[in-house]
Length: 445
Image 1 (cartoon, rainbow, N blue to C red):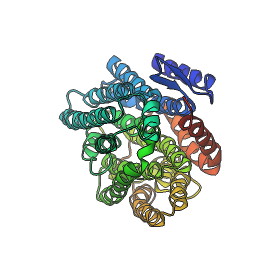
Image 2 (image 1 turned 180 degrees about the vertical axis):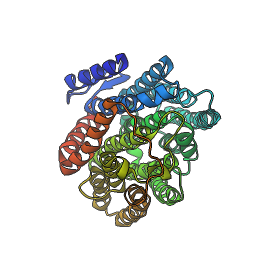
Image 3 (image 1 turned 120 degrees about the vertical axis):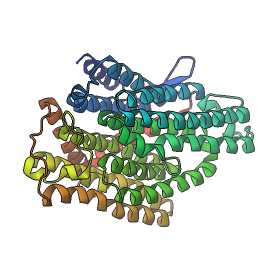
Image 4 (image 1 turned 180 degrees about the horizontal axis):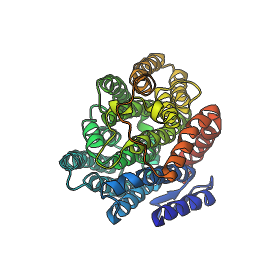
C-alpha cells in the first residue's frame, strides 16, 4: 500500500507539474518537458498495474517481500531518468539502473532454475548490448566533442561533426537500442526471459519499459542525431521489417502464451520502429501513441494470465484458457478485448495505433512498407484469434474457481474497458501526445 501510495503521489505530481514550457535542471543534464512528463505518467501507470495484478500471484509464490518493491521502484526511477535525460552519460545511467533492477527481478524466484537461467541470459546479453551502446555514444562524443543532446544536434546542423565517426557510432547505438526493444535480430533474449521470469515480472518487462525505450530513442535519435536521420532511418527500417516478419511468423508456432506474447512484442516493436523511422512529427506521435497503448494492452494481457494462475499452477499455456467463457464470461470478454486490440481489429485502440503508423508511412510515399505492415498484422491476427477460439469454442479442462483479489479484478476490468474507450475516441490521447512532442523536440534550449 505504501508503494502504491508513493506511485499515486508521483502521478499526481506529474499531472500538477505538467507544462508545455521545457525546464532544464542539474546543470543542463535533465529536462522537464511534455515528452518526459507524459512518458513518466505512462510508466507510473504501468508499474501500478503490475503491482495490483501481481499481488496475489506474488503472495502465493513467496515473492511478496521488500526486494520486489525496492527493485521495482529502482527500475521505475531508471525509466524516469531515461525520459528526462538530455546528456548521454545520464541517459546511460538511467538505462543501467533499469536494466540491473530487471536482471535481479527476473531472478527473484531463487528456487526456480528457469528464472535463474532466464536472468543469466538477460544479464549476459544485456551487458553486451550496453557495451555496444556506450561504445556508440563514445564515438558520437569523439565526432562532436560533446555529450549534451542539444549541443550535439547543433553541431551536426552546423556541419561541425565528423560524419564518418558519427555514422559508425550510430551503428553501435542502433544495435544497442534494438536489443533493449527486443527487435530482430537482437531478440533472442525475449522469449526465454518472458517465459522464465515470474509472470508479474514478465508484465513489468513487457509494459512500462517500452514507453521508456521510446523516450530514450527520441532523446538520442530524434533530438541529438536528427541531422543524421538519413543514416539511422535505413537501419531502423531493416530492424522493423525483420521484427514484423519473424515476430509474427514465430508466434504462430507457440503453445506457451508467455512465449507467444514475447514474439508478439517483437512484432509490435517493429510497428513502433516504423513510426520512429518515418522521422516526421506525425510518425513520432504515432509511435508515442503506439507505445502508450501497447503498455496498457500488454499489462492487461499478463494481468489475465495472473488472474487464472494460483498457488502451484501457472496459467501459461494456451490450453489453460480453454472454455474460459463458461468459467467466467466477464473475464473471457476482457481477454477478447485484449486480443482484438493486439490484433488491430477496428473499434479497439490497437487498430488506431497501427492505423496512425501506416498513415505516417503512406504520407512519406512508403506504400510498400505500409503493405508489409498490413500483411503482417493479418498474419498476427491468426494467433490472437486462436486464443478467442479456445476461450469460446472449447470445453474447459480446469474447473477451479478464479481466485483473485477484488482490487485486481476491478482494475483489470477498467484497464480492458479503457482499450475500448480509447479506441472509440483515440484523437484525445493522440492530440495530447502530438502536442507534447511538438513542444519537446523543437525547443531552442
